[in-house]
Length: 142
Image (cartoon, rainbow, N blue to C red; front, side):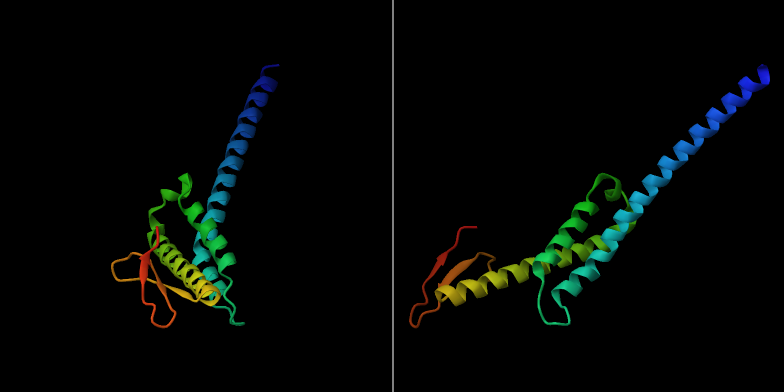
């Protein structure tokens, strides 16, 4: 009777070790998946913003970038020190996306209302009327 008890305990320990190894492998695979999302985001953003067809797919690019930035700052990935270069690339792409969105809004406002938004060197946004002789400017609330 003694040998069967010890064999059962050994099997239980082996199963527990296998289960813990499975959990560890799942965690590693999840982290690798997150790292792939982050790593592929800059090139994916560039492809969506400058596709061969000439169309700028800014909404899809922003969704991709947003997912990568959210993943970048999640608890398990934020502690990875090797991702600082990729984080800089993501922040550069974020600034580019903001510029594209503001330029698009500027074009729409200009085409529909005859106004153009100007960005003075002091960083404030001003609305400048583009009608002949009307160079009035008023500050736009930020």
